[in-house]
Length: 297
Image (spheres, rainbow, N blue to C red):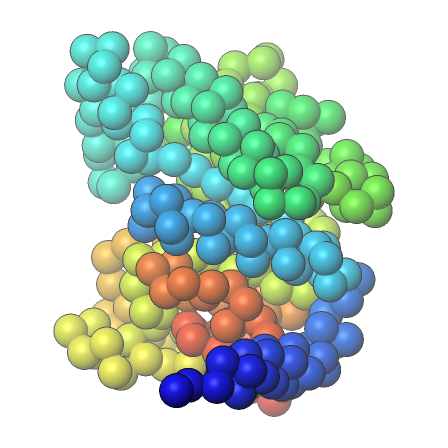
């Protein structure tokens, strides 16, 4: 007959040991801001979504100050489909005409954003949903390419609203829609928004949740993960084509945020349960960390 008290004590011993090992990291990052760009499979799979939400609430509970930034491509596509609007892409960017922009804003600001806010609140956090228009958080300008419509870039950021929310213990959840000085709405890449917000807040970390292991020496070989890279190496990896395709804008976004004072940027695999906590609170981490110089530890 199994003695269940032994099993319980082993489980609980493990749990306590793990918490104890996380203590130095919790102490190191308490009071620091971490900007999380939430997207990819972790946003679509409900069990993964639940774990990401719990991780964000966990961070807030141990004194880290999370700020969440999200896009919502798949959901935008399904609503465009429902409304009979054909999605179009040019050079990897969504062509955003006026009708598409209306849908983007409704889906991101009205639906995806509020769903995340409700999930965080239900898990015991205190989330507040924002877009770039709120408190003039983000001023947009046109991205500049011909024929892509209302695709924008970040022109400026005013972090007063974010700072006051974070100081009061709220978790801001920011959707990547903003307006220019005339009030015209723009769709901005969520990675870019996360990077710029991290830089403006002087964040300790920028974390991009993706559907890849991180930066791979050989993109076909998942075991060739590069756990730590500095800015010079990151640029070299892009120049030599080791980093290609959709990873280029992600790595560039990390490099830009580091150049503006963010301490570390992480590209991690959101398909791994509790990826956020694994990256922040363990020695090994699970993804690729990019730092300003290899001498920073």
